[in-house]
Amino acid sequence: MYRILLTPRWWGINVFVVLAIPFCVFMGSWQLGRFEDRVDDHHAADEQAASARKQATRPLDELLPVDKSTVNRRTTATGTYDEQLLVPDRTVDDRTGYYVLTMLRTDSGEALPVVRGWLPGEADPAKAPAPPTGEVTVTGTLQASETPGDNGVSARGGLPTGQTAAISAASLVNLVPYDVYDAYVTLDKGDSGMTAAPLSRTQDSGLDLKAFQNLGYTAEWFAFVGFVVFMWFRLLRREVELARDAELGIVQADDEQDTAQDDTEGPESPREPAHSGV
Image (cartoon, rainbow, N blue to C red; front, top):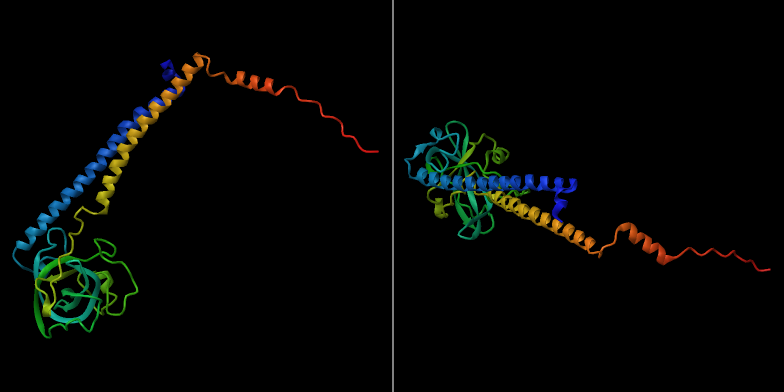
């Protein structure tokens, strides 16, 4: 009865199953490995960030360009405050507010974006404290430029004049008339009574949407293994039952069924000629 497994049709099905199962297992294991690698990268990035904040403060120029080894390092820079912008839709302690971002003009001619602090409520230039005048030296944590739409950074446009959704050189260069460092600094203590802004989430830490996509793909590949096995057994069971029914005479051959149907219908009656009234 199981000789049907040796038919050409079932040879093709069996070859597909034999190849599909290990392939799906391999792909599922690979996706799971990618997820684990991203989790490990996230933990390593957090440890690096914690270690970086404990290291000695260094001048800004010594830590640029920002990369994984310098992000979250404490730095210092000297210059004069100039243009001030507001960054709306920023949350601190589950409260929505905005950052007060001020450009620090340095001797190099470029400006360093400095997050001086956070205020609750809607972004309001009248409530944002004016920056100190004259030459100042700021000390804070070095951060990589933000990417709109990533790590919770808003990507919306059409903001009022004097506001920016992301703290990035690409965005700020269109708002101020001078070059901007491709980085920014968050002050250790909020300026002028403002709340100190929290550090941004570690960039490229690995534990992001892509990581959970890898985990979802893992489940899909292993689910497909179960689906292939289930369908193989279902097809086999169906054909075995049909073969058993045929042996018992329960299922008639197709030609016998067609003949029986023709016999029940009978010969077609001749059509009577139409009569027309006289």
